[in-house]
Structure formats: structure tokens, C-alpha cells
Length: 424
Image (cartoon, rainbow, N blue to C red):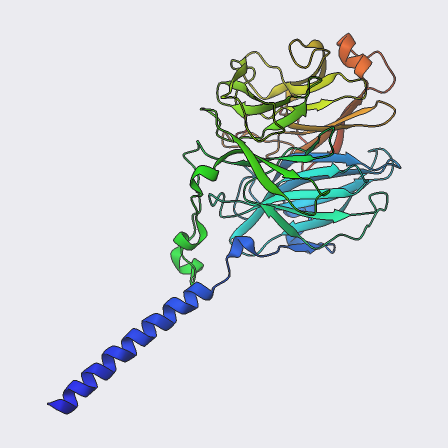
């Protein structure tokens, strides 16, 4: 009897030990979305242009000597760029956008994807390439990553190792305040029924589980503001805005002439706004700045121009479609807008832009980012660029020789079909 008891105790202890070891092994598994992605300069067949079904959500920058840089994200799906296997592409042009060469792709580990790139040249001339990284489509935590180069004028510069900066997504460029602080608009999506969205086959995912890849960061979810006071060595979250109806933040910040900070956010009711008078630490409750279908649920672009005026580029279709990409200017910090230069009457979305020292404006956006949408309509899968001057915007029509519209940066297929819709 005593022998049997010893055997029973031994078996129980062995079982407990096996379970504990199993738990320990699970705890030791690396967090996939926190692992550094691969930065590839040699493209294999999986990253060839012919393997892509969609591409879009572009970003643009220009070096001091005129080299253009563009980034976007892509994947195999024909219907759109949002997928758990998308990756980011970086391309460059040394002839002012006449021709482009893809230089590298950023691709993370399996079950993780990169998306929403952002390009920015900081005050010292360094080129930053930011992107978001997440398990599945959205894991509830996401993450802002970056690589940096000191030689943006080179066709093939040396880049720093990938570095994770914050939880969330930063699609729009940082803002440099008059005191030298950098403010990063980092969104951690809050009011969105699709977050987290991590769907994988349980057997394929082993030894990981869905629970290991998903997160809920609670009060950190919102339109966050990160600050760097040491030129990008460190970053800290200093403020947050929460406005009902803000699902995919895509917020931007400008410093107004009175020293206050003005944040604009993508919102289901239009374009929302909030104001800070203490450098971004606290923000007003928020309200709708521009309301209605024309403005609702679309990314826009805003920046301070060399002249001191503000530029806004947004869709301007009365029926709420993502079309009629149009540029406006404001001389009173956004109280009123003038002009209205139509850049593209076709389906178009996600503008980003820069201005050179001579005043030339470069706006990049996507046109039919899919090649076959949910309605069965063919698309081009295009990233497109426009150039113009402030004078053209004020006139509401081309009046200078700087206007160049519908310049293709990259395109997956040719089609005359300009209809269709796209969502994000």
C-alpha cells in the first residue's frame, strides 16, 4: 500500500513538473510583435512587384540636395493593403520623380506585419523612416518603429538598426516646436470594434496562442502625443486627446501663431480638433472642426508653409467619396480657407506632403490602392504624386510652371476603371 502511495505521489509530482515546465516554456517565448523586423535590400520573389495585389498609404520626403524618398505598404491581397502579411517598401528618385527605384523592404516575423509608413527629415537633416508593427491585422498594442540615416542624399544610405519607439501608430510627420521640442502624433486606436483583430489557425500558430498576441492597453488608448527634447534620443508620452467617434486617429499637430497647439483628427463625423496651451501636456475636450460627409472618416494632410500660411490637402467630394483630392491655404491659422487646387478628381486617398526651400510642394497619395476590390472592380494599385506652388492653390487653378499632376510613382496594373471604393 505504501509503495503504491509513493508511486502515486511520484506521478503527481512528475505531472506538476511537466505542467510547470510547459508554462515556463510558454513564458519564455519571445513576444513576436516586439521582435526587430528584417530590413531587406535584396528583393526575393516574395517581394517582387509582380507578387503584389495592392499597395498604398504613401509617405514622401526630400533631401537637401533634391533626392526624393517615398514609402508605402503592400501585400499579396488584391482587395486592399490591410492584412496580417503586409510589408513596407522604401523607394527613391534622383531625377525629381521622373523615375523611381525601390531600395528596401521592411518585413517582420511570421504572424506580424508592418504598415502605415511615415518619412520625415529632422532639423539636423537626418531622414527617419517610421512604420507601425502589429501581430495579426491589429493586436491592440501596435508599435511605432524607426530606422534613421545621416545621408539622405545618397541613393543607398546606411541605416541604423530598427528601433521601437512607442505603442501605437504614427502615420503623420512629427512637429518641431519653436522651442525645439519634437512632438509625435501617435495613435492607439480606441473606439474601434475591430481592435484587436488577430485571426490565425490555432494549429498553425502553435506554440503561440491568440491570447499571447492580443493586448488591451486601457487608458493608453487614444490620440497620444509623444515628445523628444533631445533630438530623438528618447521619447516620452506627455498628453492624450479622446474625442468620441475617433476610430483611426491619424492626427496631426501644428503650432499656431499665438503659441497654442492645434490638433486635427480623423473622425467619423468629420475632422475633429483639440487645443493645447501647455506644450501638448493637456488638451481641450475637443469638438468637430469640419463636419459632414465631405470631411468624415478620411485622412487629410496639414502643414505650415514657408510663407507662414497653412496648407490643407483633403478629399473634397460632396457625396463623401474618397475622390477630388484638393489643396487649400489659410492665412488665419485655420479659421478660413482659400483657393482650392484640384489635384486629382479620381478615387484618391491618404495624402502626405513636403515643401522645398524654393516653395515647391510635393503631395503624394494613393489611387485605387487595390487591383480587384470587394465589388469585383479592377484597380490600378497606384501611388501618385503632384507638384505645385502656393500661388496655384490660392488661384484655385494652375498658374505656374511648377504644376505637375497625376505623376505615377508606382503602379501594379493599367486599367481605365476609375470607380470603386476603399476602406480603412
